[in-house]
Length: 85
Image (cartoon, helix red, strand yellow):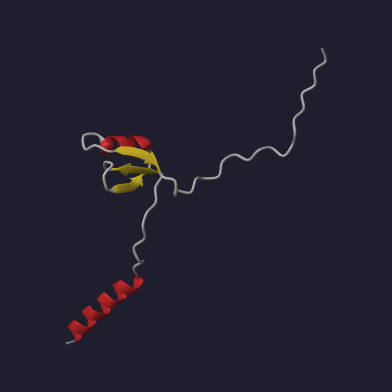
């Protein structure tokens, strides 16, 4: 009986500690064909997507819902070029 209660406690503890599953969003999507085909947005590089689509058909497209990292900021200082000629 004690073993059963111990095992039940361990199972409840594991379920309580685990995080819920979340969808992953990556920068490249694979579209499996054009007629109600599936889509897999689980690729980190364009080459990885192309390697997967090779032989099965479909096409790779950049994921438009993937948040792009911030790019370089434009300089706040204006650079002026003077011509002395």
